[in-house]
Length: 241
Image 1: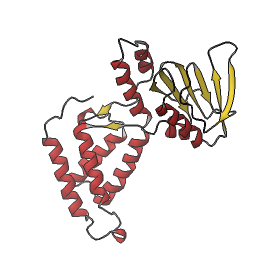
Image 2: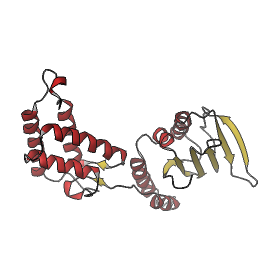
Image 3: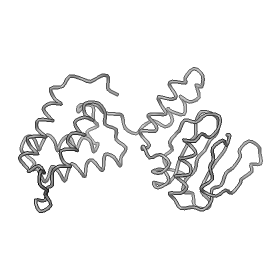
Image 4: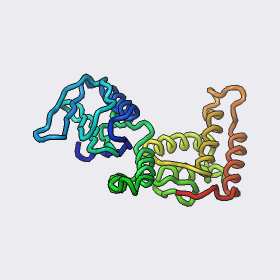
């Protein structure tokens, strides 16, 4: 599975219910009938074929759980403290539904909280950092990111260089790209994006599909401009990351 991204997940001395749920969801998602479970305690290792819907709660490390034949996904549980999940897009979407970046950020916080008792976790976290920082202010956003495109669209819309339909289409496209790329938006900037999302939910860029009470182009511009200006005038909301 060379070249596939890996996500670390916290786990104790046995597979807990949370990790077991991730495992069963992932194997179901790729449609394999069985999983291969390799006990890495001794050499030579012993591999068991189990039904894909097996409840793995209680299994102890070191273990490797993987799909048979074509390498669609695997869970490596080397020791108490963490497991590594890797796989195809379908496998990872089911195993790590919160997104790889969110899971990696969570693992980093977990590793820091256990730094004294389990210092090896910091090494694991450092090897698998989030691909994106959690942006909370417009000036923090990576200029090459999809979130930056959302900000550029906002600026163009409120300044009159982009019409409402173009803004709406572009915003949805950039939002989907941002989510697909695992970009994390928080704090004041997250509030802004959430508010714009809600406004666009009440707007149809095709008048033929507009419903009673939907925003028209002018009302959308007024609401988005007010939201944008409110962000610019708002004081910083706590530390940003």
